[in-house]
Each structure stands twice: as C-alpha cells, then as structure tokens.
Length: 345
Image (cartoon, rainbow, N blue to C red; front, side):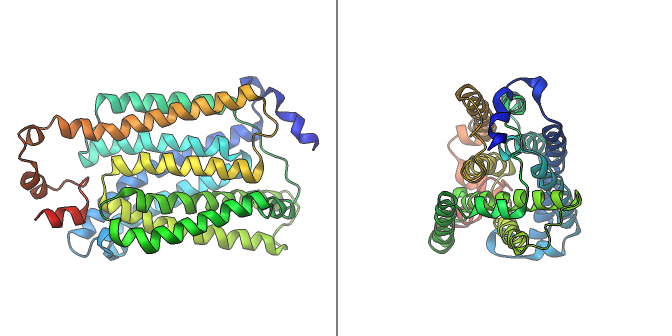
C-alpha cells in the first residue's frame, strides 16, 4: 500500500513519471495510425460494397479488398502502440488520448471522403486537444504491479466481476434482440457492443501488457495460466469489436461513428479501470475533479464534431426545399442507414 502515497503531486506537470511519458508518446502515435485507418478502411469498404454484399448488410466481400487490409494493418500498428501504452500508463491517461484519432479521422474524412467539417467541428477538435492535454498533466501514475497473480486478484474482486457480468448480459441482449431490428437504423446498437466489449478488452490488454513488461524485465509471467486467460479474453474482445465496428463504419458516416464510439468506449473504459485498478485511490479530490472536467471538455469537442454533420445537412438546399427524401436516397450519402435507404424507396 506504500504506492498509494505516491500520487500526491500528480497535478504538477514537473512530476510526470518517465513511464507516463512513454505511455503518452505511444498513445499519440497510436492515435495517428488509428485515425488514418478509419479512412483507409472506409474506402476499402466502399470499394468492396460496389462489387459485392456490403458489410452493413452482412457481407464479407471486404476481406478480398487490398485497401481494406491496408487499413486493417494500419489499425493493427496503432493498436500495438496502444497496447504498449497501457503497459506504461494508466487507462485514465491513455484512453482519453483516443480523441486525437477522432481529429485525424474527421480531418481526413473532410479531405478524402468529402464528409464536410463545419467550423464548429474545428472548435470541437481544439476542445479535444485542450482536454487531452489537461488529462496528460493530471493523470495518476501507473500502479506498481509485481506479478500477473496480483492482476488476477484485481480482476476477480467482486466489484469488477459484477461489472463484467453486467457487460456480458448487456452485449448478449443487444446482439440477440436489438441489432436484428435496429442495427441498420440506430448506430447505438453497433457502437454499444463495441464499447462494452472494448472496456473489458482494454483491461485484458493492460493486464497482458504489464505481464509482458515484467517478463521482458526478467520476471517471466508466461508460466502463469492467468497470463494466457487474459490473452484469450483480449483476442475475443478484439475480434468482436472489429466485427461490429466494420458494420458501423459501412452503415453510418465516419464523422458520426468516430465520436460516438470514442465517447462510449472511453467512458466505459475509465469506469472499468477505476473499478479494477483503482486509478483514483491515491489522488486528491481536486485532481479527480480536474480530470473529470478535462474529460467533459473532450466530450464537448466530440459532441461538436458529431453535430457538424447535422449543421451541414441543415444548410444544404435539398433540406431547405423540403424535397429531401427522393433527392437524398439517390445520392451516395453514407450517413443514411442502408435499411432506411431501402425502405424509403
């Protein structure tokens, strides 16, 4: 418990640990790769959908599209950097920095995909940067873990087991009952599964990253079965996330998917990390409030990015003339759900 006294001066920028700096650099590079991958994968999905069954309609023709694989490789590189970041810094620091991938994704979508970025969207990008910077300066230091058994003890405490059970039940209900009915018209169905599963996945990623970090430092953790349990959970969560994220990207506008996914995923991941790793246990109330305010600032930025598309649509002549339905369905507007386009016809 001696480490609980360490974080007393985390609010001071000069007290940022070297591990946090490493985690920060890895998280930023991860955002660069992941933000770019959204656009590359989107182009691949569009190209594959033009000659086969779209992913949003249950097709897998994108698996034969080289451009989609290029985006996938880019995302994998970003996820590897993100994986390494969790081995050095707490989720409260690493996860909110995913906002940078939203900025990159929105900017590239504006330039490459023609998805308009309103001036308020640019303000949203600035808010994301400000919030991310504040969190970096006030984040808690990484909890000192001596072995994977300690991680397993944290993961099997009643509070986290309850959280994991609620997540599993919610995911099953959404997949079985809601996605067949509302998946093509309500983005929250796909993103909800990605975010809920992702929050558990990040805990496994962080646990496995710490285990590998200890292994490379001379304390072999690969001998413990708990390490491989974390690896299996991580792989299951990653594959589930990728499947439903592909469906969301193929069905809805990228500028819509990215911020909503970020907000839900980050919020749930921070909750899971606070429960399992007790990230806030050694911080003062002022430091916790500062981090929460910074996170709200990031959420405000993502909200503005989300509303950007609505503002652009409202200002378009087709909407103002009140002749939208036939005009819009003839256009290749990715923001309109596939099922909704078909029913309008």
